[in-house]
Image: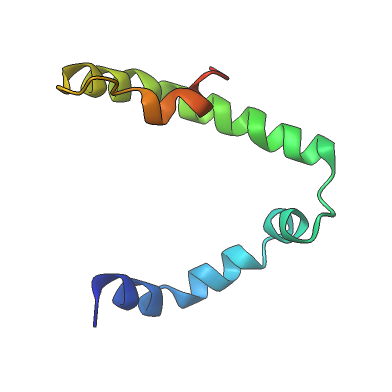
Length: 78
């Protein structure tokens, strides 16, 4: 059994609870209001922002031509 299969099997109750969450259900079926979605995005940005500095610090140390390429799409919001 692979690690992924094992983790999914052991966490099925949590995965199912997440899938039954009203926000996830609304997102999936298209009934989520713009106001609720905007609130989620704002909350996500607020809680994600503190982790951007350490991530950027690590990326600056990488010896890659364009280490930020994979982050450019979503980091612009911050």
